[in-house]
Length: 222
Image (cartoon, rainbow, N blue to C red; front, side):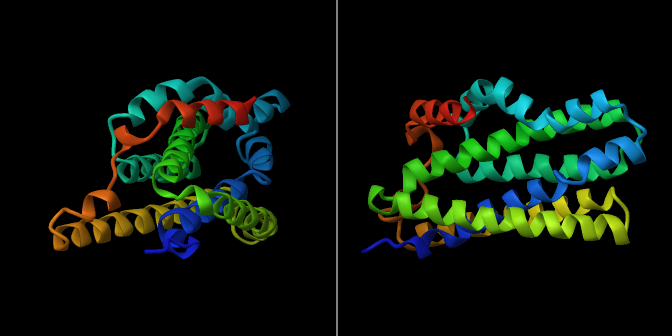
């Protein structure tokens, strides 16, 4: 059967859009939260703002090794679970140092999600439409960045600055529900097909060319 980009809306495009929006929702208001709500110094503002990229750079190899032993959907859900938890903890943080640790852990979750999604694309998306899927995700994320930046200011002004973390948690949670629901649907479909065609639908992470994914991931960082 012909595979189109519509087959990957629930599992790949929407979760990527939601998580991209969750991350960019926090970014514009994070320095204000650190400086005003937590009375952090300018140095701490910079350190905390760079916590996600630092975690991504440091922990990508370790995350890649861990991913080899996990099904790609499970890896994505676990990563999003970490992001939801750290967003809620960030909302409750009362110290810049506590927030820094939480954001570093969140950066590991964000790295895990990014790598697991890239691995899923390498394993499941046919080469003929892979470029189209990548372009659709990138285009949707550009719109998400613009909309999230506007809405984060509105939320911070009319509720509280730290409320941005609750919005982040809700968006990441929605992405996790989409991936988990899609995985359960495929498992049920696999069982109905007596395993023959279902095995292709539920390809596991060890079959992914992980070194190629990690190499491309590091090239993107550098």
